[in-house]
Length: 285
Image (cartoon, rainbow, N blue to C red; front, side):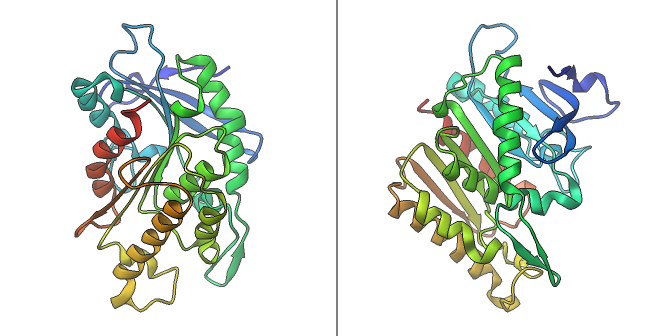
């Protein structure tokens, strides 16, 4: 099994709060590559025998430490630490999976898509198998988790939101919680919308959000005129919400949908919305 080391023992500068562990170069047989895996343990972990829900999050270098992030930090560690003081139900183990840089797009998309004239083959199903077949058994073996579906979540932003919602819908026997922030809905000619219509059953709990000023993200991906991109991004995520509602989700019950006025496509926005997302996902398990 993996060798887990304290991340803060290995770096000279960091912004980590609490106990962050790292296993280096964990091999993925499904993707034929390897990456570090981060595990953040909740405040009461060391002094208790509790078992905790687990949330698997993408873009793992952006979650805990500003010094490793390429575009800002989610402040997941600070957020869960603060939420734990509010209510122990909000404590969770957070697993951070770094992306593979230039392969981020194909790993986070289960659908084939076009980019600058090339047709790229999505590897999202292999990435999900990596999480389900390799990472989850490792985490469940090495840490005090609650391995059941109701206490297992998946979360991310943009393409991380795409693969989170896809994985949640595609593998309902594994994931009972989903956090889909600013989901990149348009990949594979809006294929995620079709997946939502086909697979949404009302199982588990879904947090879905979007900012009203995220349109610049669409400029390299679509032919939508620049002055229409903000509205188009919101409309695409609203369509996902409507598909979830049609499939059995009820906003305020097992679905939480948020539009943040003026919010950009940035880590700072996702960090700002994270506390309420975690409250919604974790309060009833």
